[in-house]
Length: 465
Image (cartoon, rainbow, N blue to C red; front, side, top):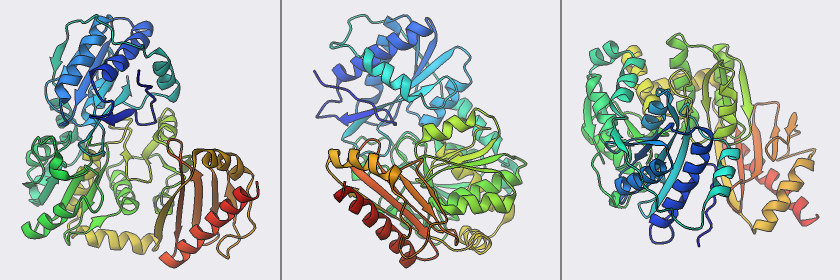
């Protein structure tokens, strides 16, 4: 019997090594026991992306949930996870949703992700409860389920969130690249409805993803960047496999970093009249905090993990919540990340203000100041990572990279910030045998010195423990 363990993003495994009917069925049974025990008869939505046998696995999950007394409904088409979450949040009878997707992982992987009644993530306590309820065998009981459209109303919501008239008048050419994932068809249709001249790329169902990893980063975005230059498009929107994260490519064919994308989206939301706090994880760029100050928004940093961001949303005073990798949550739309909405807000920005995307990024850099962001992962033995988890909260170096820390926080490993706005973070991964290190400073050399200094201090402490 395979041991199944959830991480913060759910559960995933290779199709040739564990992602099969038995494992999926056991998880579905556990979900039925937990959701059915607390909310008998409630609705659970089940979605799937373009991966191998996605619809088959979704129907298996739905049949088992229905066999345990829940009202299970399967998406009538492949869908991005924000569409599934949005549909759950707007269905008063819905207790949660199950997405068959391995997000940015390659086509060899299948996965299961969970959403709560408000479309946001389920808690770690909920995941632990489901893990404990996983049976040793797949139950035989099956029930009937229905199909439902989780995409159309979501597309309507996206169109209504942005200035459709301004976008239609601008006549922008946009490359839509869902990377063969759950956003296939959806992103292009929305852009078409908004009056854009849409160039479609990787926008059909293809189980092998043509060798792509559906991750909205280089080098996987290289082909999109080339297509943009070839077609003379104004920008491109690249989605990851499940559509909760996106990236944009400027008119020169250059990927805009998430550290620049988030402040742009923040400013666009303020221009639309939205207000509130800016919430970011401890590994997010200082550019977000500077933009918050520039726009007069309160700001909050939380430890890494979207669950920590999600906790802040309950106060209903958040403008935007974002993570290091570019996942953007606009809670007025959905209490989860939505890569499609983030991309559309950039389209709206260009339509309303004109100019090029690179020009807007340069203007923002001029306002906020240039910063260089670097990251490094150090792989260790699991026991060493656990030791580091204990050591870092007691580490208070007087100097890092030749600079004296202005502030040290141990809320998430060791994070030191300095008078010039630079910072460095060293933290153990919660799910992998890895120490993650991030630094940001005025230039790459200064950031590298901070990162090397912080890692040296941490590794010295480990060696002397």
